[in-house]
Image (cartoon, rainbow, N blue to C red; front, side):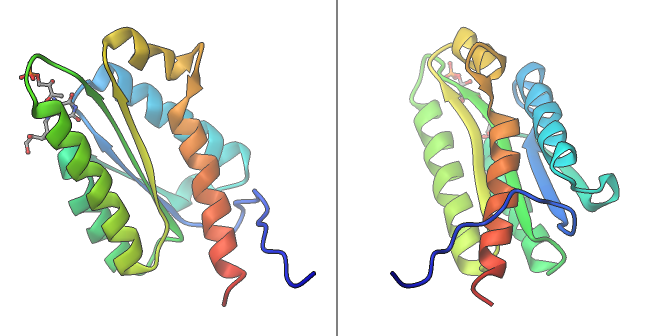
Length: 155
Ligand SMILES: Nc1c(NC[C@H](O)[C@H](O)[C@H](O)CO)[nH]c(=O)[nH]c1=O
Ligand SMILES: CC(=O)[C@@H](O)COP(=O)(O)O
């Protein structure tokens, strides 16, 4: 057996950025609450959590890029909620948000977590913002801590 790379979930020394879309704010505000809960309960200091609000999920990658380029953040969490409407707009917003977040992470070498809730209807979004399906903001916070600590293992 060679090396095993498995990071802990201790966020004590981490600085985390959160970028959140204001579209569907009644959901995304709950995702932010969940993310803050997850970060703080795993030791991330309140002073080490920065939050940026953008118009919608499509803009999340752009501000995530601004954050990672400061060199200050151990990880960035992208949050948003995209609920299918009656046109194909849903597909374009989701696809670009996902591709953009992945691109920022790979090009910056800073973990950027995909915390965009993409649903067919409002009920599904509510379920993922702190009810029967948990809180995707909380889940994203835990992933951010793990990825930030995992990256440190490769230094
Ligand atoms: N319909 C949703 C959007 N649409 C807005 C875009 O994200 C973007 O802000 C606009 O196209 C201007 O560039 N955004 C969401 O986050 N969720 C939606 O359901
Ligand atoms: C996901 C969206 O962009 C959506 O809210 C837009 O609704 P519609 O497709 O009915 O214009």
